[in-house]
Length: 121
Image (cartoon, rainbow, N blue to C red; front, side, top):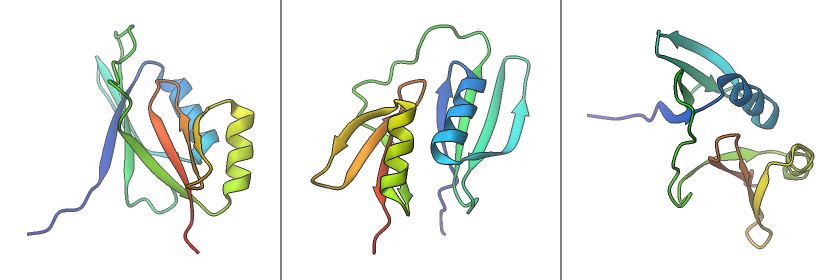
């Protein structure tokens, strides 16, 4: 028996704002959508399409989600850390930097943390 990770879910308050953020900040694109009367699921992927981020929009929810102590995150590797950092700095979404480790984190519109790491050489 084998298992393969296929997606991670984030609940979002403003689907359009989140879609725009993930496209600009990380180059993710929509691969499929499931519309229901009370909610919408949108699956985003990078060029590899092997793992997806599922955004769930509960249409009548108005209050922000409780993300606890922000102790969880998704990590993204980049082939150009300097260019990525410049983009995210311009977007104003960098929330934590660890120069000693050569990494930093950005925060999406709902407060989820996303780690940016350089590609291993």
